[in-house]
Image (cartoon, rainbow, N blue to C red; front, side, top):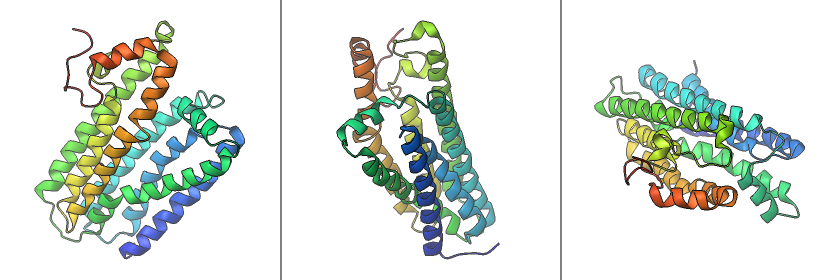
Length: 267
């Protein structure tokens, strides 16, 4: 196993992620479905995890642990999205249809830059992984144990939320209705909440390493994106377009993000 300096690792990760997104852009242009970018944005993190696992010089136990966390979480989310998106591969998700309209008359060109930005964001968000995988200290700290525990809670919560929503959508009787079962009874976006909590866990894990405080950048960016940009705003706009008054009532009865912040929709 060859150890590489951090700059080389960053370059390797950028080349890998940008290359993958270039291929995905060609595919998306062919099938007229930009939604596939979500699948490979998730899968790019395991790619980064494998590169760091193979080439980073950090203490093996720490490096293996953080890389395993990243790989497992990325594969789980990417596969969940792939199952959902590939079932309707000929029908582009509403928020990407909206972007396609806004970016006319040449949406493919703008989608190219959008896909490449997603690849760059993969590497930027991977700051906690680089910090942890480069740390050569041969002893784990309490931060790393706490980060792993929080990660386990996060991936479990996100998995439960995703499965509850998938089960709700599979029932034909729920067509056109708003999911308000399980965790969705307490939050409109429990999946997003646990996804953000996972990035907090990576930050906590990185605090056990030198310069670990820099890892706060990742959960801060994720929180901003979820609350203000591509996460909740776009999802709720699409829900309002497709479900109308039913979703407005759901909005008035549930927390937008944190599951226990407001009263549940039903007793």
